[in-house]
Image 1 (cartoon, rainbow, N blue to C red):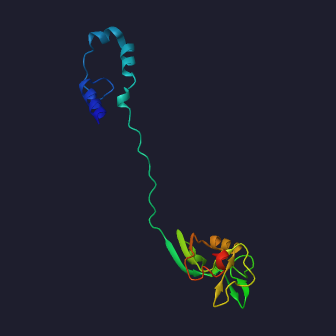
Image 2: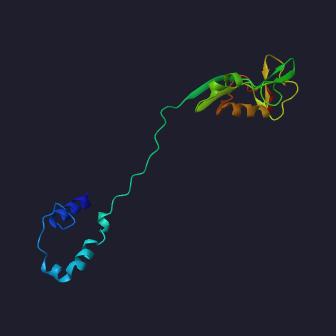
Image 3: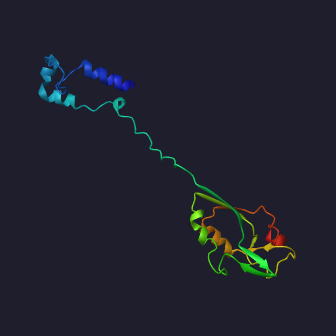
Length: 167
C-alpha cells in the first residue's frame, strides 16, 4: 500500500506533459539546457522496483457441491450348496451379479460388507459342515472393483467359513 501512496504523491507533486489534467509549467533552466531529447529520456525512465505490481493470487479449485456415499449390506460372492460350490461373481458365474443395481453403485464412495471370505482357490468342499457356508475365489473380487465398490468390510459371522486359511 505504501507504493500506491508514493505513486499518488509523485503524480500530484510533479505534473508533466503526459498527464492531460496537469497544468502546464515553465521548464526549469536545467531542462531547457538538456533540450527535448533529455526530457524524453527522463520521461521513459524505468519504474523503480517498489512500484512493480504485486503477483496475482493463486487460484483455488472450488470445493465439490456434494459428496455422494452409498452403503451396502451383505455381499455374497459364492456359496456352498450341498457341499458343491457355486459362484455368483467372477469367471465361473453365469452373469454380472451387480448389473441390476449398477446405477445405485455410482457414487463418490461405495462401501459394502463382504459376507464371503476370499481365497485364491477355494476348496471343492466346505471345511465347515453346518449351516450356510460362503466363500469366493480371488477372481470374483474383480467383479467388486468393476462394479464400483471402493471399500469392503469383512467383520461378520461368515468370516471363518473357509477356516483359518480363508480367514
